[in-house]
Length: 119
Ligand SMILES: [Zn+2]
Image (tube, rainbow, N blue to C red):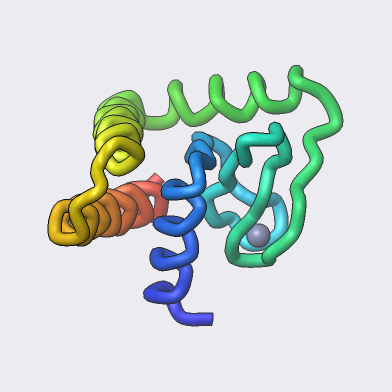
């Protein structure tokens, strides 16, 4: 699967109301998404990822915070932006606007992936 396909898939997930998580897949190291039903999905492996306990998630996020504060805060901003545009997307019905917003979200995800690779 190309990364372009991945971005499209992530965009589709976000449009469905899934939330991009700050955790990566233990298999492929790509970003994980939490679906509306609470399930955590890796769009790359196309499978559900189950964390053993909430504790594991906390350990992961603490580690990334101390590793590089500057980069993780930049990715936080991008996550907030993605969330903001996803909300706009949910309330927009004009096709041209939807396309525009999807374009922005796609770019944001692209940046987010690049930052994740730097980490
Ligand atoms: Zn994966």
